[in-house]
Length: 84
Image 1 (spheres, rainbow, N blue to C red):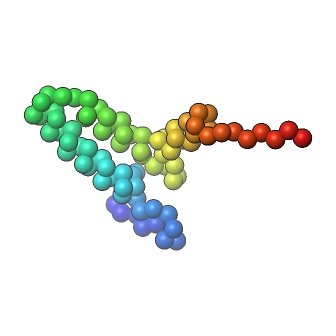
Image 2: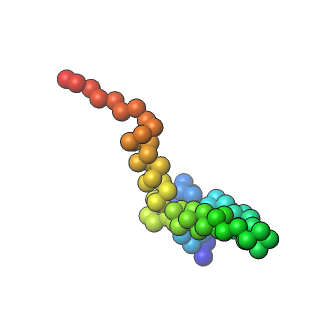
Image 3: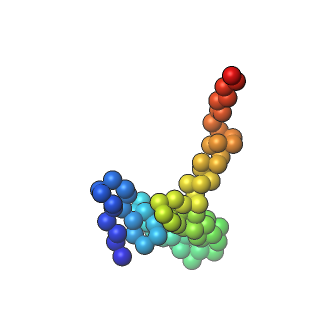
């Protein structure tokens, strides 16, 4: 089921994913299936399933977004403290 964005400002979603994520999952699934059937290599399939799970959106947030924000807060962005 295609859900049209609210007020034309939010991103379009299809089921539980954004359309961009559906495209990435689809391409990765094709590559994973080819790797599994032709070479017998399982890790691309596992990575595709993990990515699909992490990008499930619930109330405009995904687990992957939370991980990105947490890594940015704890490791990659400088924290600014002001002593008064």
